[in-house]
Length: 115
Image 1 (cartoon, rainbow, N blue to C red):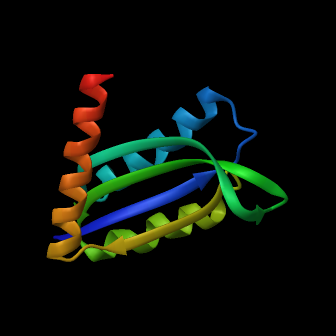
Image 2: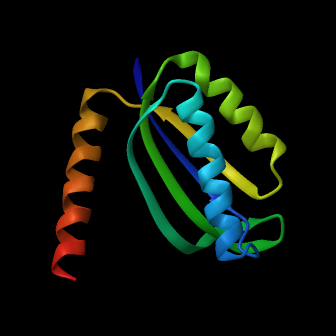
């Protein structure tokens, strides 16, 4: 099992319900391929550095999970087919990136508890 992180940007014209539906679709796809979800983060609507499909913002989401490498290709094929997804990036995490991701998760938990 490899450790992966996937960030994807959804079209800003989607409703909140459509966003939840899309995120659930990809989470279910990963779980059906044997993935163990470690973390899911909704980064919200963010301004893009450059326009994508004439859009200047997008809804960012991050999944951190472990899965066999064969599951990544079907996930990315679905991202390419889905017009709601503007961009995506999947990276394999090494031991240093895994440690950094854990620190980020802990920091986010602390921020949510104090808010």
